[in-house]
Amino acid sequence: MKTLTLKEMQELLPDYVFGKLENSNKEVFEQNLPAYPEIQKEARDAKAVFAKFASTDIDAAFRSHTRNLSIKVNSRLERKNRKHRSGGIMKYAIPVACVIALATFMFNKHNNTQVQQVQRENSVATVKTIPSPSNVSIPAEEHTNSTELKNSNPLPRISKSVKPNSGKTNLSVSLPTDELLYCTAPALWFDYGHQPENEHQSSTIVTEMLNEDLAELEAEDAIVTDIFCYNITYNTLEEIDNSEFETIIKEITYESK
Amino acid sequence: MSYSMAILRDDEIISELKNGNYAKGSTAFVRKHQNFVYNTALRYLNSVEDAEDISQEVFVKALESIDNFRGESSIKTWLYRITKNFCLNQLRKKKIKTIFSFSSVEDDETDNRFKDENILPDENMENSELTKSFLAAVNKLPKKQRETFALRYFEDMPYGEISEILGTSVGGLKANYYQAVKKLAIELQEFKN
Image (cartoon, one colour):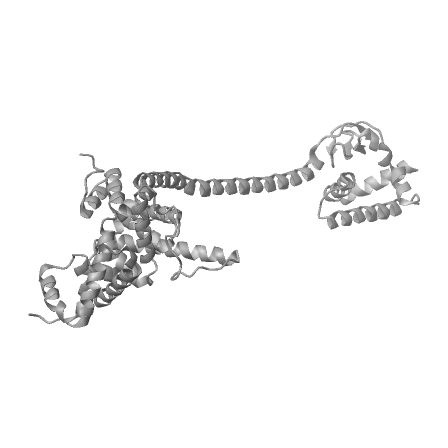
């Protein structure tokens, strides 16, 4: 007979009480039992108590709480899968939509910048190209073989006309009607404060005025707030050579007198 | 015979799930292990509603990751681990909630489990009272003894598997089991035949 220690007997006791001990172990346990009266008593008490509970179905007690659990789990899984599927689409759709929106925004912004630049450039170009609605000749003579020195609408333009046979040159300023008063020679000298004595003085005064205007325009980074002045000053200086300029001054001086 | 009535083996259930017969496999899987998962959750959480919710979450998680189950341990061991993790997370959340609501925190070891009146149905009053007293006594046991007793007595799990789940040696488990049975016999003496 195999002799068991108290500890070994204690370890086998629960399975013995609940009838889960293998036959070989059960025999050994029962053979050793008389040697341990304490274990004997404990085994007897436990058997008496647990016999009462053996008839109770613990699982049955919980069955009402686990009823339909498989259905709930399956529907929950189905919901989760649906969400995952739609979430999967959204996972890609949202970033793609964001990228498209961003790209569109950047493209529009870039285009707007370009349009603004073109508009700015065009605004300068427009000054030089749009024809005038009305013409006022300073020494009103024939206008043949006219070479435009500058032009704009509604801005004034100065034209040089050369009479074919005589070779006499006439200068004309084209202005919108409401600007006429401000573009005549008397108006120019009125703005300056007094009328010049001679051509040289006229030339100096006009040059000073033009340079002053140009400096102002350059300081404003060529943002033309006063297109009228810009037209006069910029085009005059850029396109008129010295002899022509002297001629203009001469004409202005004579006209004012 | 309806598949719901058939008791499939774990490997059969897993092959059903892996072969795409998902509805049949998942239903069989849940029905086979629902009491085990629910009881385990109830022991940890002491709340019928929480145990029901956690049971659902455990099965959803288990079925979603069934492909990761390598079969190195039994399904029950695997499910027990998932259930335990979910329950501990739930308890942590509850503790945080309790702390922020300035209420007293219940001691996990000394709480009176199964005090919830809804735990047991009143279909059979005598049986219900008996079971309630039994479960209440079980839940008065220290944690290790309680888990050992529950897994061995209710789930009929071999010591080797319980040892794997609880991380205790087989000798230690046997000692715990003995202590649990001894304490229960004393606690439930009034019900002696």
